[in-house]
Image 1: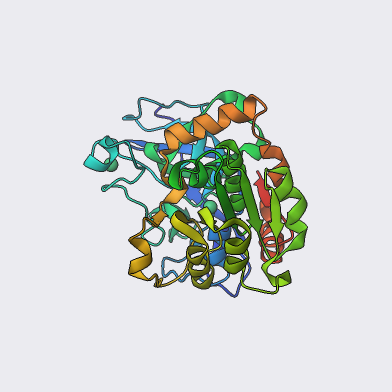
Image 2 (image 1 turned 90 degrees about the horizontal axis):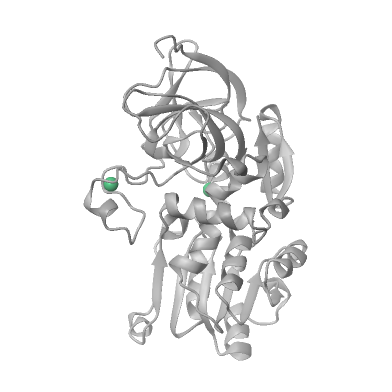
Length: 367
Ligand SMILES: [Zn+2]
Ligand SMILES: [Zn+2]
């Protein structure tokens, strides 16, 4: 154990929203205390990484490595790590939990008052060769061949999930599926709409179907998403730009409104329109990252409308990742269908461009 050494490897470095990511050498230290060092197998490109890359979300923690959706093998562990060992297969976890605090003890949510969720207050877990600290997005930064993390930032999964596509379980699948099943709590025979059919939205559509919704309206301005939305369980595809009236009015007229609206874009106007589409006791689940102050008439909340939020569908990663992994292994969940493109780390800028143009469902980096 004592022969462990720092590792020099390649990572994609973000310095400025107007510059491509650059592939550079970084140094990954030996894991101390409760830390683990992981060797990445694959990592998904999520719109949240894009928000930083394209300058929609500002950060002063530079240079930074983006990436939070990852599949990896544990390479080595610190002396206090008891639950993990070298060779274990893990998914990276944006909602790390200390398992000691009040929030963690109350298993109804995935929020930890100690570890919390931090996008901008990211840790420096890598160094450039000149010694400059490199920040990790969501305290992770998985667009790097190796990553040093706290043990709570990874979740051990079934070794049979050692398939490159499975990296997307850690954000897209987890967030989408549990936003429908756990955050919105879609009920059987209900009417639900999902707005924004990226990888997260399509998984939300599948979650609505899994929970037995009767009408599932998939909404996107990109008609190329129609076929896959229907495949994942949508009963109708609507392009709001092709309607002659606002989409909320259309939903009211056709269905009397929706019991559940799941917003996967992060746009203030879309969130407010989704609220207007709700039945008097409907639930709006906010999943997309972004938006500013929302305006809802208080009187309309009094009939029983609910607005719900929570990262990763408010589901604990240890439970959620393993449930989804099992569904994949049983052939219940077609995760492979969602990975449309594969790139090497050197091609990462092309992967972001494809996402920006809406031409992929999920692209992954294969290390
Ligand atoms: Zn994500
Ligand atoms: Zn905690």
